Image 1 (cartoon, rainbow, N blue to C red):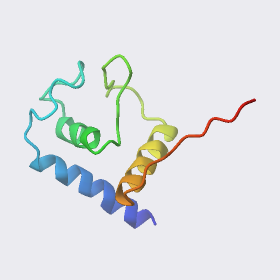
Image 2 (image 1 turned 180 degrees about the vertical axis):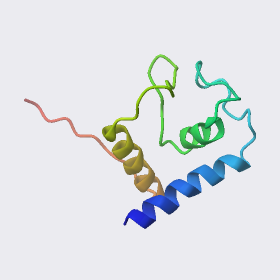
Image 3 (image 1 turned 120 degrees about the vertical axis):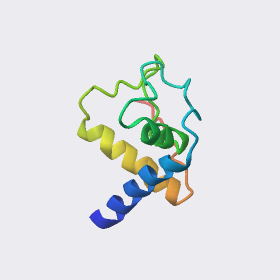
Length: 92
C-alpha cells in the first residue's frame, strides 16, 4: 500500500511539470512563482487535494501536520476512485 501512495504522489508532482506556470497564479496570495513547490501546490489544488486556508493563503512555511497528510491522501484516493465524500451530520 505504501508503494501505491508513493507512486500516486509522484504522479501528482510529475503532473505539475505539464501545467502552465501561471495556471492558478491568483489562487493563493502568499505563494510566489519562484517558490520551490509552486507547480506541485497548484497541481494538487487543481486536483482538489489541497485547498489552502479560508483567507486565501496556502501558508507553505507552516509545519505539515499528520492530519493534513491523511486528509490529502484520502482526497487523492477518492479522486482516483472517482467518488465523492458526503458528510452526514447527525443531531446531538
